[in-house]
Image 1: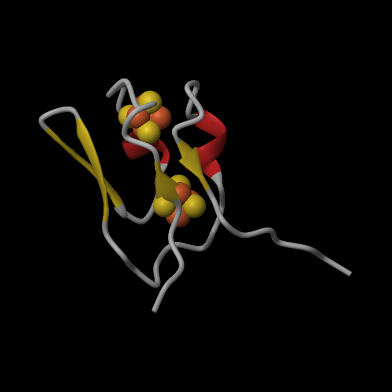
Image 2: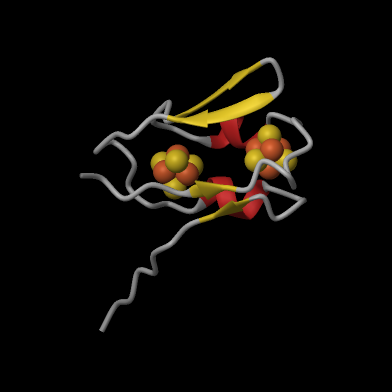
Amino acid sequence: MAEMPGIDREKCDGCGLCVIVCHCGALTMVDKSINIIETVECDWCTDCEAVCATGAISCPFEISIE
Ligand code: SF4
Ligand code: SF4
């Protein structure tokens, strides 16, 4: 099962920026509500987390290069 970013809908203001920056189509917005589609296409780029001004998206993973 692909691990996906988590969304706190209480914090989301429906700006839609995360949908725009996601390059794999994992994020969709329906009636100002964000949905995440589980997909292996998500490469954990964390762009959605970075662009979210309200802190509603959190990526529960870290990429460490050793
Ligand atoms: S960027 Fe953040 S506030 Fe904007 S739609 Fe996405 S989750 Fe909601
Ligand atoms: S981490 Fe990157 S690929 Fe995955 S949902 Fe967020 S923006 Fe899309």
